[in-house]
Image (cartoon, rainbow, N blue to C red; front, side):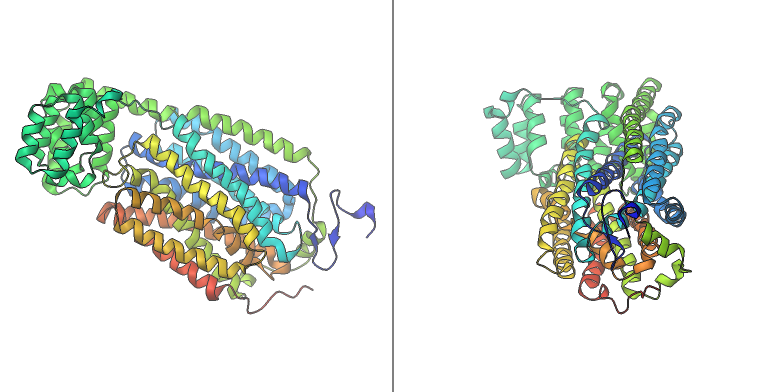
Length: 561
């Protein structure tokens, strides 16, 4: 081929029909990876937010991920055909425009205050991202030698991880807005406060009651907020009710977040009506949210219904107004994202990216279909691996804010928990940078297996412990998630030749695991509690361990005609 027939940005390797390494093209693709990572991870903030706004249980809240990742299953084949027809570059531009339309859809959804309108906008946004996945993932693997495709895709995914790291931090600030009461700084070190905490931790109930009778409200509030969660097990609900009657409404609202749900229900239902009416709307709404995701007995359910019925109309109106305002807090962030997506689409459209025309031409001249991929076990098992990996990762990330706010885990506000979610995804970003370098010397299969083993151990730890141990073990999962998606993806399409796009479409379809597994975990969490529900992601990582050790070894490759 002479120079006039070559793509603008580089040369084609005649043996592999793949481009050699193109830094600029890879940089542009990395920007696209960043944007869809940012948008995808915003779901981790959207879930607890809309869960509170619409009084959802865990399974209902997981419809967010069910809708988002369900789009991958429904739209990946049409997306693959679109990319085959338009080419990689135009396919990427189309995906960005569709994603922008979905982002703008959050504005009318917030006005409607209808959960299902939010889900519709989210589906459109996810459709755009699905097209980006179909086009960009295989495109990056073609921008260089086949033997370094895993390393190259890991580098691009590192930018994706940067987006997922920033998203929870900004989302927590812009979306999970809320008021919080701050005690004076000297309360923590006051002798009375120190004595109260010591009494709670080391004395029996009679001594605790005696100490609290003489204490100031500020000291009582700080002490209850800062003792280990298990202390509440020895505090009877009648004692907590007595303290609730003493505390001013703003301090009581702070303490209620840490009281176990069953005792919290008793306290609220037994408080004088005028005291309940003085509580902040945020306190009441978040309390209702905690009851929604707890398996209540018939007596407790009746008690909760009676409590709701006794709220006066002004309080109910305040709670509704609070929920409506919270729903509208997503409008500006998603509108800004829509504008950015359109600008990026314009940038990609005018930028001269290489077009792998020879590769696309080869595919166009074959009669290969998606069915042909099923003749290659490593590709099919790789798609199953993506199903379990995405399902496991999305489940952990989706439940993390709610998990870290539990009284016996992190005792955090949602805003604080969102910052820890950023650490979870930040670990994935760091891990992908490290993994990209490690794969030059370590087999991708071996590294994948090691990371799966570590995550299995971390999940067992977070399920069997509490407090900071449970917090840091679940956050650390992100670090070892890091290389899994790009590695499984590359292993699945290895040796697929002209079937690469069909194999890619099958793998992208498998991202539907992000819809099914979190929803299933939500059902489990509503039934047996969030702690034990992490058994499901554990099963996911067990399969990934199998794929790394055995399932990823190709038994045959596609012979190009």
